[in-house]
Image 1 (cartoon, one colour):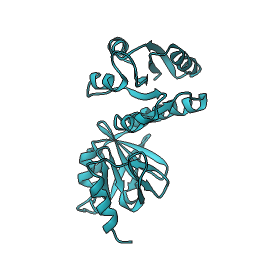
Image 2 (image 1 turned 120 degrees about the horizontal axis):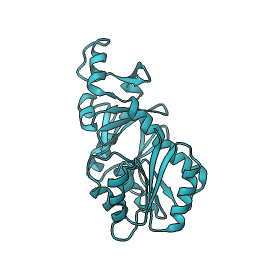
Image 3 (image 1 turned 90 degrees about the horizontal axis):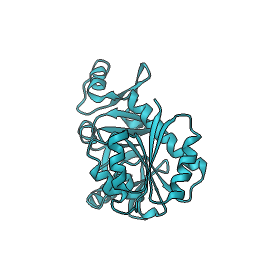
Length: 254
């Protein structure tokens, strides 16, 4: 399936650069352009784009307002393109696939598009958690908490130990599981998965993030509060959960 890309940016040179890069990608089918969010809302109704390159600061309707007005059931992937780095955390909270800072080079652009392609592929392979649990119940002993998760890969089912999970990220009605530099998408909400996992082993640090406590290295104040994982990943900690995370780290056994 070819991607249908919509470029939403009030700067014509920026739209031209993105279009130029997209035209070199054989997996891009349709490319549209809009100079503001209001125009983009109309275009989305007509063309049903599944990949958006979205500027933040625009006249009439900015990027984040556009996302709010586009509806809760988001069927498209978003790559923010902006000259301002202070919106990166908010973009993450909006489940953006990536955040491109202007000016960017072609390789950085292609890396961002590659992320979207990978997410689409994972979504096509995603197995509903209810089905995964049904399979799992046949091969493991009953436990009060989930020990392994069944992952569908092509036509095969593999089992991921929960101990091998680094962190889990909410993606609307899906969760993206990060484990050993690999990503697995499951069709379930983060709230449901949190109830199935051992609370002593997984800690909510953000409304969109659940972290394996064994993977946390430290808590740091840098552009907001973050937890740093042993693999080097830096994940945001929400203000609401900051004290809870701090207490956990202070009280955990060395």
